Amino acid sequence: MRTINLTQGSSDWNLWRTQGLGSSDAAVIVFGKYFDTDILTLWRRKVGLEKREVQINSAMAAGKRYEPELRKWYERVTDKKAPPVCGIHDKHDWLKVSLDGWVKELQLAVEIKYARAEYHEAALAGEVPEIYRP
Image (cartoon, rainbow, N blue to C red; front, side):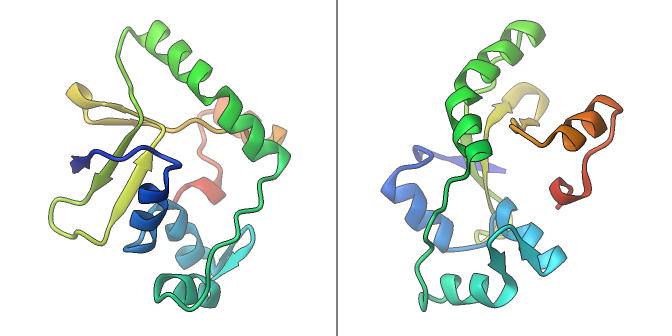
């Protein structure tokens, strides 16, 4: 993965996300629908026929609010720095990712979720909930 200098949430980052496929798009492709986006809507957004209207729910708002604190907790517990990073696939520029954290020396992505209770229970049992696998 090649990292690029973008601030997540910025207008440049939002534009960059429209110019390829990212990890959130993968769930739409695999499942045919992910939250408010189906495959046709995703295609329309990627070709510029429709703008994405971001609807922030309470879990998303809480995740955004607690992410910096949770990243600091992770760094303290693991003694590893994990700054947020945007990246592009080494061979395919259209494959993109915005990581909540990246431990460069381990090539390890850190994903922070403010999830439903059943997803949290699955994670505690060592399972990745199906919705997050793509």
